[in-house]
Amino acid sequence: GMGADAAAGTPRLLRWGAHLLLLGAIAVLFVNSSPFLAEPWQDVLLLALAPLVVAAVLLRDRLPYALPALGILALAGGTVAVAMVGIATMAIRRSGPAAWLLVGAAAASLTALTVARELESGPVGIAIAVGIGLVMVVLAPVAIGRYIRAHDRLEASAAEASARAEIERELAARDAAHAERERIAREMHDGLGHALALIAMQAGAIEVRSREPESAAAAERIRETARTGLADLRAVVHA
Image (cartoon, rainbow, N blue to C red):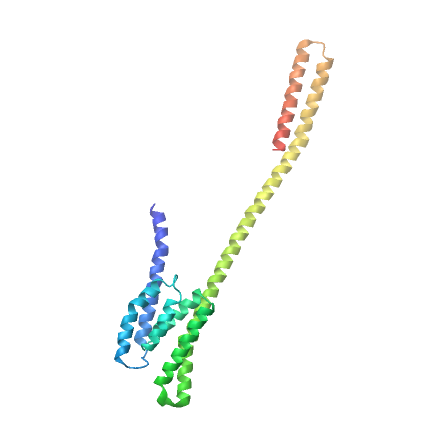
């Protein structure tokens, strides 16, 4: 129905919103970042990387290493935008050796390019520029990605614990209901069963002592009915 279609369309809308948000972040960072070098070949490199970056953003769940790898190439093109977003998205999804290798490669590339650009600033200026660059381009995206990863895991763990607690509550309620049914069945068997057994015994005694055939036949019917009821009661209790 329409409700199901709307529910199915919501995750798709959120995914495309995330795609556009990441591409917008790359565009904003690109516009506000200054190039390491001012060479014509950098424009060519960035133009060649642009469609690959778009594809890497769209396929980041399947190819989590593609965007940070392209970000390292984009550093040579003069922009830190792709590397920042790529490292952050990778840190959300991966934390193994390959991820840290790409982080190290990005840090080394950024350091080399910063040194090349700041040669005239002297050792102190170079050290400050490298430190600021590493914090902004590498460490901050890693920290943001790892925080989001930990937060998502915490939410998943809380949801799992809540679901487990709900299952345990349902099982406890089911066990309590079963125990209550057994208690009622035992009480019925003890009380009603005793009464039926007594009726059967008294009807049998009347049947034996009665001198009138009609009274004896009626007592026999009562005794058989009581015995049948007692057997049915036992069958229900022990079912």
